Length: 383
Image 1: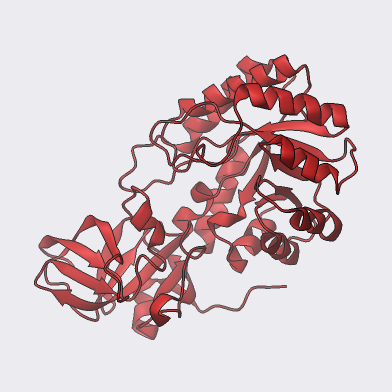
Image 2: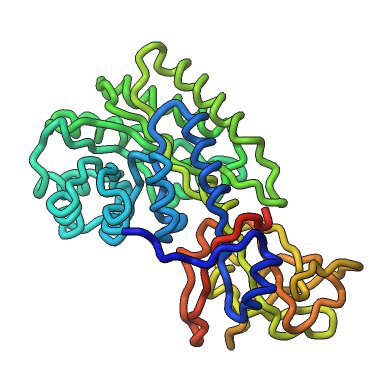
């Protein structure tokens, strides 16, 4: 099933000249997404999957499948159905440790999923009531090995300690499933060495448990290149991971899996919002905000790139510090960052936010009736 035939434009100026969109608009660059997928395929020694939660848009899944991705990281039955529509032959890894028996049954019976993540004995017992033990089914124990510096911590919700992971791995193997390990260093992780520490921990767990790992999933966490980021290029991560695997596992490493989300899709989409109001040279009010596509900018310490359009021309000149508000009747609808924008920015101008492909379309709401958002394919967008 193909995605809808979205309007295509050479660049943002051409889109504005033709459409002058009055609703929030996502501007998607197909070539940028394809380049990001190829960067991971060429740079990572193992199976590249995509964490669907980062951006579940139809065109993202369809193009990644066309690029040859053989597996996807899914967290819900709805994500399974989405992947099956656009990548019917792809494998799926059910790596959300929190799942009900009904969801496990759907994953197993309806979608044929053979890879499940757990971080608790009760979850293993839950799976065993539905899926007969066999080495064809992979149970992946999610562990944590300390918080990575400069990352959004996932360890407060998920992951078992090294000691707990040893016990779980032994139980998984004793029951007759294949045992694997996975970790997540945290979103937007700028601490390269966090991967080395976690890979070393995986080696200790496997050795102390007395098992041979089927696979090691190093998760996501790879950073996007926001203006506020100090992270090194992805090649440094790939090189360090390669050396850490060699150091830990020698000449017999487990199959490696990576599941990028943010780093895969962030650069492929920009967000075009219209100015509804400018107040006293201090604030601008836009047609989307914290309850919509700017939700993550509200919560995460990131600063996207921005540029301002007046018609099809870039608005330049002296700048001033502005606070950005969304359109809703809620004082919570404001961004914590201060943005340098043209001092004479005015109603009906547009602000284009770059690097908005991750956790934007995935988290929009219709709060206060602001529900309509547009989608365009645009070759040259703000990065």
